Amino acid sequence: MKKRNVAAISLGILAMGLCSVTANAKSADMVITADTYIADFGQTVRSFTLENVPEEAANVKAEDFVISNDLVMAVQSTQGTEDVQEVSYENGKLTLTVGEFRYLPSDFVVTYAGDQNINLSFTKEQVDTVHTEIADDFAAYSEDGVNYRLYIPENAARPLPMVIWTHGGGEKGTDNWAQIAANRGATAWVEQFGDVVVLAPQASDNWDETIFEKIRSVVLALVEEGVVDAGRVYGSGCSFGGGGCLLNAQYNADLMAAIMPICPSMNDETMAAMKSLTDMGVWASSAFEDTFPTRDDCIYECIQALKEAGNENASYTFYASAEYLPYGLGTAKIESELANEYHHSWVLTLRNEYGIMDWLWSQTK
Image 1 (cartoon, one colour):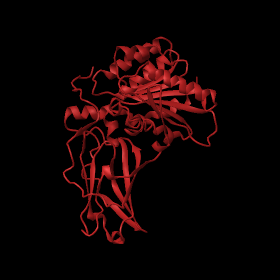
Image 2 (cartoon, rainbow, N blue to C red):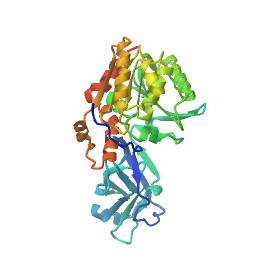
Image 3 (cartoon, helix red, strand yellow):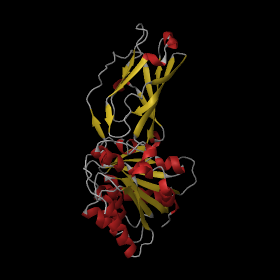
């Protein structure tokens, strides 16, 4: 039996207040666009495009800019790495390619320290438009008290497989964005498989019948319309959303072919839900050492119960510490921060470690 001494801490991030550098008011004519994508740790900036800048901007250099970021994270801290790497100018448009850093939830200031006759400084609040690869293609809906995002690829042969992604606790809210922007949980399926329908509801508090009924109505409508293959509806989610994945699978068991819960919240309710899935493919993944120190024991108990009930398509994966290192995780010196890094097992699973995503994709009802 392994030693149980990992302290539980809250998910995600630690903030340290406002940026120490402030930018002047943005030039009235300048229009700023941020180019972002969803990386392992959330919405991440690649570049900024500044339009309607003066001709003098053609002479600026990358080293003329300083980016200050207030984000301090237990994992993947970007402080000191987000400087402007390259600049290019053409016809009044200046593009700043940056050392990638998280757009959500950080506050940042881009300060231009070159020719003081031109103003190229700006803050996050002064960015006019944000483009986010793949995530922008998720349509936003708010129906029956439930916010959700839905991705349906255009010009794809139908019917299509469908993944229901339930988000982690840090994405609770009503913005109808965090659930697809905080990590690759929703977008990874599009990256990995292309032609797939992805449904990502957002919980403002706990997962409940209202959300599960909305999931049900969306799935059934898409099946009836011929968009979704009724035999290939899948579920996945991480942490709080891993528990939501289990609860939804129990509630909508007749719709689901298989599920892939990642470091799911383990309590009496979610354990009972997992043990009820005797006719459904289940592959759970987590860390040996997690913020919740008995998570793996609870998962093991549930999977063994399923096997004893005759479910031969139930399995688990527990990641060893060394498996996190290639992803920049598992290096913290403080024990509580280290446990938080190991909690990020969705990073590994959504990179298809052990072929877990491929397994889910192969399942049929």
